[in-house]
Amino acid sequence: MKFDLIDLRTFLAVADLGSFRAASEALHLSQSALSRRIDKLEAALGVQLLLRTTRKVELTTIGRGFVPRARNVLNE
Image (cartoon, rainbow, N blue to C red; front, side, top):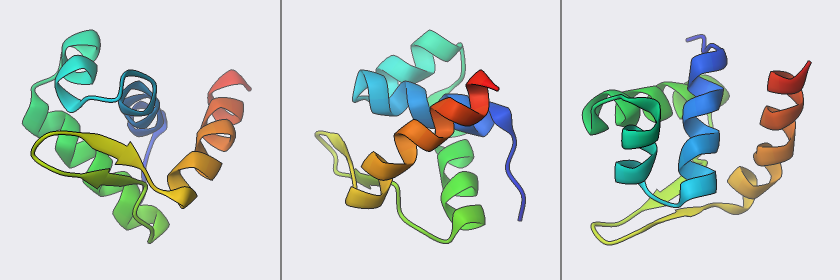
């Protein structure tokens, strides 16, 4: 499975804003579409980037390490 730059932007929005709701509003995506993009990215990478609960979302250790890499890709 492949991912694209929009998936990276979606991941960074969630990482930066700490919320699927806030990220979906900022990106003008439904929460379900945003969630599908994150799921697609995680499946393509074969790792879990975010820990989700009904109350919050947090970066995993791998997710924290992936943030600068994702930013570098988007900045190139």
